[in-house]
Length: 267
Image (cartoon, rainbow, N blue to C red; front, side, top):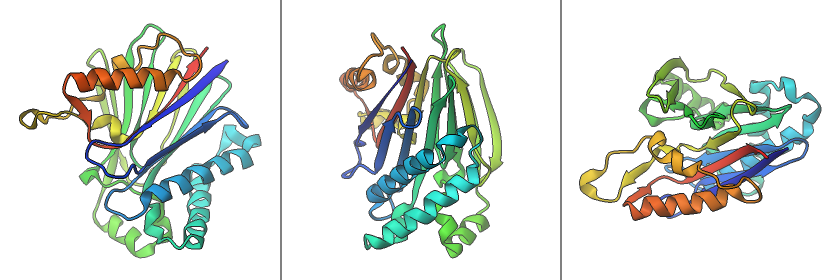
């Protein structure tokens, strides 16, 4: 049996939380999150629109989850999101947000990433590894560029790229550079990785509150306490992260960016 839970917390430097996350079990266990761009207006609304439309797509295509088309899903979500935003009187730039769509099917977690973010997998023996997507100049390629030709052209002209970065607790690491619009579909077997986190890039924003020690901590420096579950029943993630973040705060460590995390675990 699979249990899911989510956690959302505003960043220390933010006045409005621009992350959003949803989860559920119909038609299968799923976790979907979006991370709005701080330099665009109303992206806290755009993040919500994207998440709920992605949820609708998963339900609509529930009979074909083994073969979801990455580009068709992204196109369907953003074009319907544009309609929703316009009906609400919002500019389409409110949809400047990364989107991560994940679901569990036959003991495998599928992760579709549109923009940046990270997936954390903890192995049965306890070792943690992190797969993160990063963009040059910290400028993710948003789905919203697909509905704005001029901004899409500007992004292309800037010669941006993205990378898949893999880091493990044992110190090993790997790096793969990709085209900015290359599809990212990751798969994780829950038999080998019974605890899996889906994270916004806020997981990479932990710093010391002391201005003289503002070096960013790596995710592997903060994750072990976050994944030290005493039980995985009920709201296991909310309980654990409430304690872990308090421990970090007591050590003078905060996350300056909004933090959204969803977790899959085997009961």
